[in-house]
Length: 154
Image (cartoon, rainbow, N blue to C red):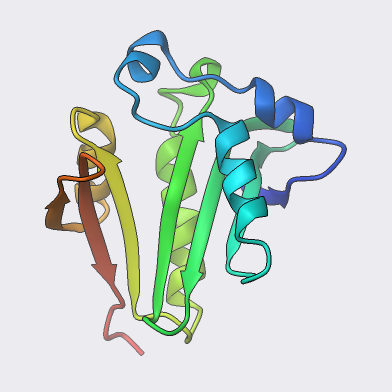
């Protein structure tokens, strides 16, 4: 259903035009995509932060920023968003499930982390429904930190 495509000259402007709903924006549930792309650029030397356009066929429906920490054996969904025109169509779940599949098949990581801003109950409910467990509340960033561990089915 969805694929992650590197940010490039063909999709850059489209990714920048993606927007969340007014309510999500007012709640400051996610940083603007331009900020996320700038963050990825800032950490480019480390080679562990990856921004992607989320596509369904030819259309860009969202954005995701992944952060790999091989030393801690953690993969983190740093930021994720679905454009307001595509919300409620299963894309958020499909994005998280795709990251979970990547995580499960990558021996470098033992823990998948995702967090969400206080008040973003839709994201919290989605993460819990996929098996993430709340670990802590990060007061400094006003975020609930959720973790998902590998299954023992190997």
